[in-house]
Image (tube, rainbow, N blue to C red; front, side, top):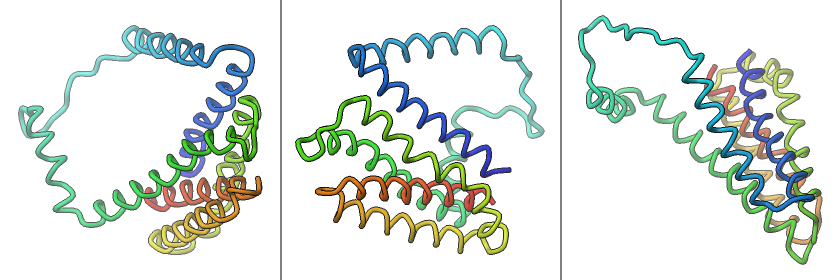
Length: 195
């Protein structure tokens, strides 16, 4: 169940990349920002109008903002497993974000010279890992300790980064393989961290 929910969240990010690539093919890239600006404020208004207002529930009296911040700062010192999974999620997220950010410059450079539509459709490369993650997590995450699943995910991610860096500067299969493996690393590690 965790893999299905996280897969849906990440698929929406990939869908946004495809939509923005299609929009920038026919209009200015600034239109994407104006559309997202309008949608964000529409969501803010809808949350204000329809989100229920529940009274706070605490058993230990009044909790201040500074107590909450203090708890956020001190909880990693008390929970070592939380610190380990947070650091792993940070580095996996950094690898994914650096791949998808730099990919635009690589694909539009003189090496590949792809259009904005093709670069936007390149987000389709990231979809198969999210679609196979529920099946894959039933074989790996459900059968083994989550730490083993996380280690396997990190090894897959490292392999993807190596392939993309060595092959991706002259052959289009390099960024495709890197996208598949880095996104697979992301969904597997997220599922393992939540298990």
